[in-house]
Image 1 (cartoon, helix red, strand yellow):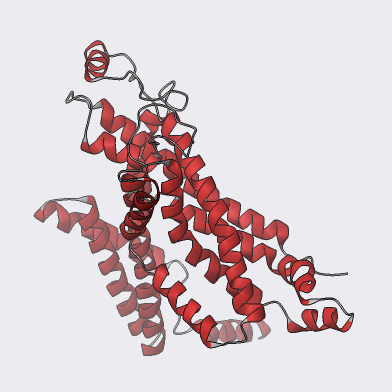
Image 2 (cartoon, rainbow, N blue to C red):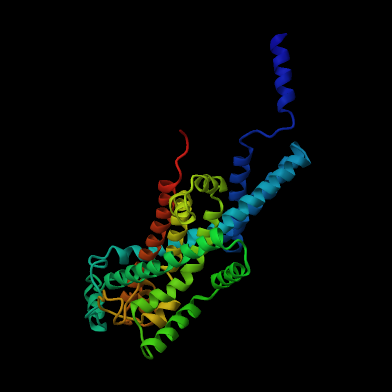
Length: 368
């Protein structure tokens, strides 16, 4: 009798519910049917994936509506739409990463690619490499050094200006008209096209040092125009979330305002500030347009940011694609461009990971 009652309770609890393996059966059926339909109209992977997703969603919702009812079916429809939107948004990212990996790994793994420049590499050299089947000569060392130096100087300009501006807006302005004007201008600068920043820096140094001045420092000034708004906004938000109780406690002990900011406010917000600065660096390190008009092109190593044209990774990629050294097939210039693109993505990824690491290291310690 007890066994019979248990079975009846179990039956009542599971009545109107699909088995756990149902979605898997529906998914396999949708994939098979989609493959059969695509073979009739011309098979391609993208169409197969889309048709499989549509068939799976429709079959899953209909099955749920028949067995579980309208409420469960609506829930599964919404879940499928959200998941589909997520996969659709993820598709371009995966596609870009896969394309860059497939095309960039051969160039990045070429011996000497990271340790040599383009000095002395001509069309005859590339033609000989293709004809003889030898490794492609010429590397990205000069462009890598240029990108690091330009970004370093841009950071050196942007961080003090952006941080001090944020401190003024949060700690000193008290919402006056001047601070509102600064906030408005910062918001406007956030949306400035990068080429405009490059033209501004080029025009400024043309007036100061003569027409046609192109150096790494000019490029750093152009990038700082793009970095400063990001640093200001991120630092401002981090300073705003510092509890006022900490400031009031310092004032109650007789600590002056500037010292409170230096010793209490900034250390509390340093995690978010450092993360914002790192993300600002990652945002500008791949800019191409400002560098085209401010730093120029170079095939040799130049470590002096105040004199001479300077190469960078974005302009190196642009030059290799738009002005290939040799028309040979396979094209050595294209291989070098893809290798530099992969290197640039790796640098941006490392900077983003660095931002997370910095945020974790400098985060205020909790607990006793």
